[in-house]
Length: 70
Image (cartoon, rainbow, N blue to C red; front, side):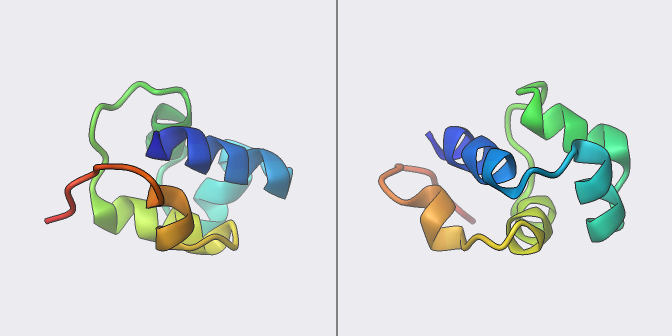
């Protein structure tokens, strides 16, 4: 699942949700909800800055998934 890939990327980065929020200029609660699986479908405009900040790629996160991006 794509979220497992994103969580793994966060673990590899060693960053907290607070650090990610500060680095992406997003509310900490938004970032925290994503990583605690409290939101079903965050928007791609929310995910891309997080992925980029963590040094990942869209392709890496969504590889092998059947996610529909519209």
